[in-house]
Length: 417
Image 1: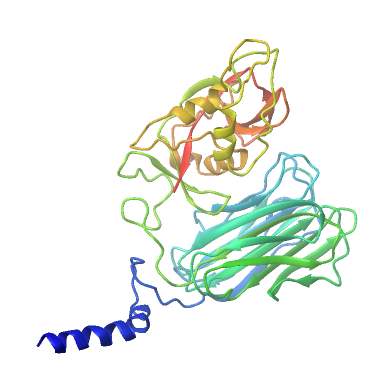
Image 2: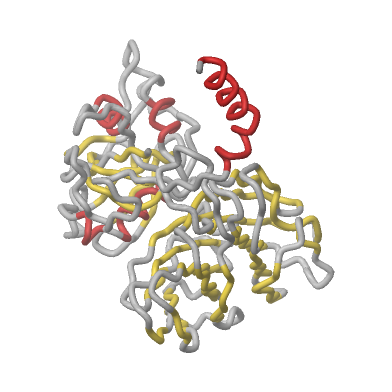
């Protein structure tokens, strides 16, 4: 009997790798079988006018379809493009801009269709810049996955995206502030082009999707030509049909504003990789960005506008006052860094683009100060603008700009899975 058991065990071990890999699982314990999402259609606006709003033609969708909307604006000034349509919740899943006015602004959103319907999508921007948008429909997807963005002063735009599922699609969007002629363009990895337009006095825009990027791995996507672009590029994974992981109250797709079992609030998805992002139910209070000092201000060189984790960690280790002896704190960052709440201690002061996620979802999250009143109605980001100023976000209307570091503005901390 023992010999028979040993032979059976040996046979299982010999075929185990093959048999085990073919067991599907919705919990990620085994290697899940996945089907690439199906591209269905696109709905695109004009790109060469400043007219706002811009609305797509009507298109038909089915419940469960995943929509990827992207907008490109000729200048990344402080007026950010917004999206709406279909009575859906739109999540910002990728952004590339500097708010300096010297690059194009690229923004990408995702939404899951709730019911069969005919719908339109509207893009709005009041900056007076030329802009436009496109909406891609995918069927048989479990949602948006990884995302990555980059800015480049001169060159051919590319990013490395590390996918999270096999057989995912990947959407790539690029804006060229230098408006280089892309008529002889060459895409990396041969995607299917969805958008191209050039206004020689404004910008050149590109959009494409890879229907099936292949196995989980890191892929370089974008364009290899033309070179000489001053580019803003975003790539977003559209997951295959394999089940997504759970992360809040046992679900993989909680509604924004859901209070998780630990008491934190699901705030949406981060723009540095489309990770679940959480915030506290209430503001942290008023703090200066530095130590309240108007003289002896110092630079942290923490300029990241996409993710604030590294900004916060670096800022709390640096002196905010070159005149006063010792190491003086950066109070806003220090508050979030020291925060222990809802069983977690990895909170940080959000970067400017992460504040944009909070602003977009402000109604669902709740308890933000929407008065627009000085100090209490403005929220600090961890993104530094200069030695004397850092970026703030006004939650009454979405204005973003830079303020003196010694002013005591509001703080709302975030963390990510």
